[in-house]
Image: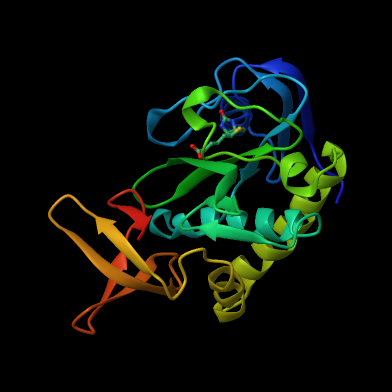
Length: 245
Ligand code: BTN
């Protein structure tokens, strides 16, 4: 679809650019792409190293007409779309709930969703995606846990077709999310890519830490786990951290 694209050689953070564009009335679907970020942001207040040349830094503006408590699904929809888009380059792609994209146990993509909302309505949502494309080296802190498309496919990958593939999957999945009553198809596609599906995970919460079997996600995007006594629990992103065991 013809869309509004903001391209930056260097910017602070494409998430900040999109949030501002959203505040200024930019249309749904506006996309910001940068070659380099000076203040790239990760989840949990971390920074996202954003050197020039080898990465994709992109953010999309969404204006969904849904209740704020349904917004966590937008991250799920984006994670699925990124996984399916990149899946055209490497088939072995997996999702670590809620929104890291993993290949061979290493992180290839991070997603940061930020919402501008009142109690009962969403003003707009910024979904930012950082994809490690052609880098072969990482900062020391993430050297053991990060990977890139180039490292996984063995050759360099062009960025523009990758962005287009992600946007194409996003358009379709977002449409399904908004317009379809039964989201089971979407959920199944997401659950099939879960890295910890049918495996034991350690749930590290504020009150307790326990081991349980990851079984999938429900229609609001929460992780469903089965405890040893057979009872099911919903895990809310942000409340807990989930580790493979
Ligand atoms: C994570 O911590 O895993 C999320 C990382 C998200 C990084 C992307 S890069 C494009 C967009 N702009 C930002 O400042 N962050 C996101």
